[in-house]
Image 1: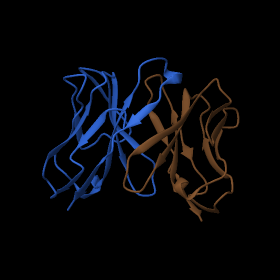
Image 2: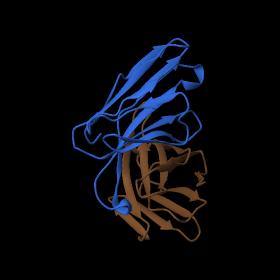
Image 3: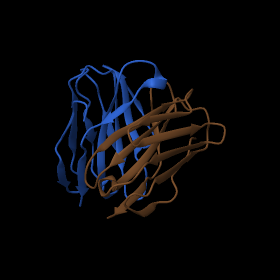
Image 4: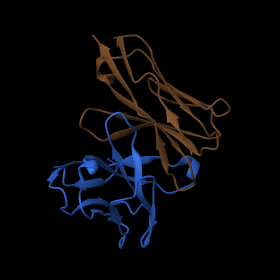
Length: 112
Length: 115
């Protein structure tokens, strides 16, 4: 069974610093890996999807990498802002229909 | 939320009561699924559907029932609510195409409390 882990569970950084969020998974046979943002009391917002054949994906200040051989994905957020404060979740797609296995998330606080 | 609506937003039930959480989408997506989110844990898959008339169990299906009579709707039924079912419930849809390229989009959630 695929296990997805996100460490640390919480992170606090000063504004302007780059954020590095980690996601590890136990089974390298994934179809894709998706990063989400969740604000308190809200739903999940899709940030990036990396296909299994890709090494990285970029969108604005966000960059996500994928290394299937080591079972790791990393989300980089450049020049963090207080508005980036949220919980970030990663999820691995484990079959062709897209069943997702989620990590527990990393709660990020960016202090002004 | 990519055209995914969930109702109600909040619900309080007493143990043993039944209810249906509604999920609807207006974009003709085949794949719909239900997840629950509990504190300190990632989202866990309850049930999913790959098209009208086709459903299957996820990781935590016990106590829940689903059906998919139309493409647009995928209701989740709690047959006899228990305090352990207190959670936030999310419905998700998946766009068409190859599995590798498919993003999933989530509804705003239903916050359920069972007393």
